[in-house]
Image 1 (cartoon, rainbow, N blue to C red):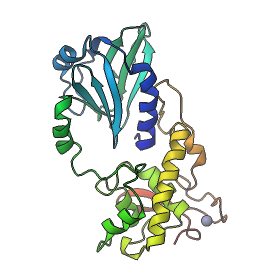
Image 2 (cartoon, helix red, strand yellow; image 1 turned 135 degrees about the vertical axis):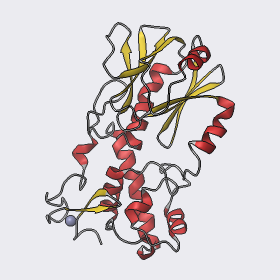
Image 3 (cartoon, rainbow, N blue to C red; image 1 turned 180 degrees about the vertical axis):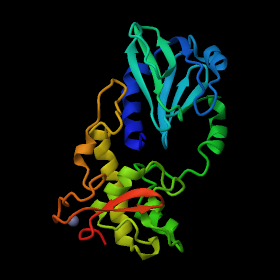
Length: 276
Ligand SMILES: [Zn+2]
């Protein structure tokens, strides 16, 4: 599943190809994604229109046109957006495409079809925000996200810290991989109840979450299940994993074997010496 760094990498890859470009034609496989594609509506509103901005909120990519409409794209489990020469044959799982006013084509590929492409007038993006993006916490890379916020939001709660930081209402975009890695670097065991974490630890955790996500973005994301960026290049942050997927490997810090437990049904990896 693409997590926040992979979505950010895709977004950064799209920008130079797509910003200020005109769409001349759209098409689709007519297969249902998470929601049916409003092909006619999309076609009428974006053909011969120019892309004016490409932004991200949580794991949603928002592409806005000079016709004051936006596409709100979620990649689901296996979605991806990439650029291809128009003459390249489509792949089996390409479900939506936009021909640009040059030789390139933006294609949405999604093997499992849990992703979505929603259409909305840009003025209604607030409405989308209240439905799709409602109750979302702050962006982890923004100034609003810090140790004080985590401490405040954890008040009188007892859940495991890993579940807490993976809750989108607390902070968006900290998925399973990056939660495991951040907790290792912060020296906090993933199943520690949040009411047992002190202020200094919250500050350390907020800053390791930022560091891990930024480092992953710099590495082009993590390539698990064939993730590639908009130019079909793989990311390599998985080479830097300290604990994720490393059960029984030796800890890079103290040489004890990495342990695996389930927390909230998700695989959780930690070092019992370095994390407490
Ligand atoms: Zn260790």
